[in-house]
Amino acid sequence: MKTRAALLRSAPGTFEVAEVDLDEPRQGELLIKMVASGLCHSDDHVATGDFPVALLPMAGGHEGGGVVAAVGPNTPGWEEGDHVVLSFLAVCGRCRMCATGRQNLCDFGAGVLTGSRPDDPTSFRMSLGGRPVSQGAGISTLSEYTVVDVRSAVKVDRDLPLDKAALVGCGVATGWGSVTNMADAHPGDVIIVMGVGGIGINSVQAAAAIGARAVIAVDPVAFKRESAVDFGATHTAENIKEATEIARSMTNGQGADATIVTVGVVEGEHIADAMESIRKAGTVVVSGVGNMFKTGVPLNHTTMTLFQKRLQGSLYGGCNPTYDIPNLLAQYTAGTLKLDQLITRTYTLDQVAQGYADMKAGKNLRGVVLFD
Image (tube, rainbow, N blue to C red):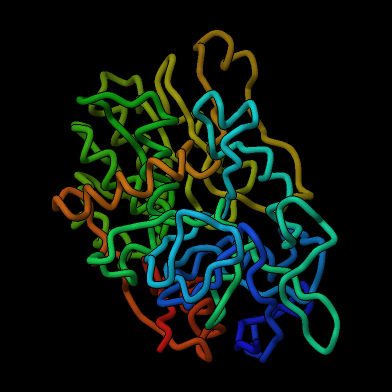
């Protein structure tokens, strides 16, 4: 069949909509009619060249929800009409990481920038003019229809609004889990969230949910600082140095228990500043990303040793998609997780480029593409 999708033809480049050919689902695959797709900064990292992908053009999008329109042959457990949230990391359930409860580090993650079928890096589901088109994270949620591996799909309650549920496929889970899974955070802690966009705003609400006595939201954009208060921030700051002083004033000069780095484009200086902001035996969680070709963080390694500080990377917030996606949605249903308020603006598929421009301009917590 043919479908319209947002394509990135070059990097650096801009997403543009084109009609592509889409394979029918094979065994173990689903045809999904997309309902909504979040506009996440990771796709923009591909567009700027920060993240090199294996094949261009690429059909973008990796945070979305939709309805199963067709099920591949000999694929039990699925039926047309099932509602799904797509995970940007496929989960095999059998590798060492999956078997030890770390699905976010599944071996399939090695192919997340390949855009092919997870079991075959040479096999692609989309094409344009006879040439293969890669899928963003293997799911390409910025497409009216997409075909995905069942290991990238999590079935959800049909009563849930998919435009809201879609957000737990990346941004919500990553930000929430950065605090609850990766920061070793406890009730009564002082937590700094550095960057309050689509990821960081969920770290703010997670820190509030666990009972942090202070949640300090850092962002140069006034709109985002104001929004952070609605999500549970107790204090706001324009920069990390100001936030560090706030944390020290509350901790007898020690600093924050944890700082979550969720700025849009991470540089080494961000990490160094975050390490300065925490107390002895504190934790810095790095959930944002930057240019994959840049290296170097200006850290005082002796201070790290003497103060026993911990620098923790975080992929997908350390989440297990098959558990955490339904769990987060259960919290939403119970009223303990905010999703509706995350959506600042909605766009049509043809407005994808504008949506990313608004994101980079700091106008959105989360922009969402809605499909007919």
